[in-house]
Length: 194
Image (tube, rainbow, N blue to C red; front, side, top):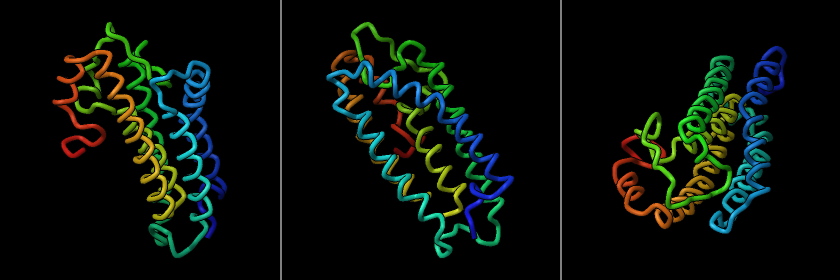
């Protein structure tokens, strides 16, 4: 069975949602590449290469019938995946609004930078990265393949965990105690768990 993102009319819904979700991401990447900083430790490149490799593996896996999430309910699974993609993108956009000028694609931190504790940042330290993981995993789910979803989820977690370690070191060095207080009261990516 052909994955629904390649079957009309599902293809239209999937690719429109994908374009809507990822278009702002491309602007962020372009801006970050132009102003890459020493403190970034190539974390943007790690994210781009890691997710590109995961997508290169996830799409072919979706064509393998034995790896389907639910052969009996492909349409439901498809819409759950699109829902995860859209929800993740909405959460990312919320995070960008909460951070305002502090949001950049690369890692920058200054001693006068405020620690944002409102919105999703009241619950998590890095909700924007949680959102990225949801978006990528949503694509795997929409493809209808548990292997695609797992590959994209694991790769996303791996690249974002690296980014978090680099970012938190930079923020602790620049901001100090206020950021230390912030990280001591919130989990990184999953509320109450991690």
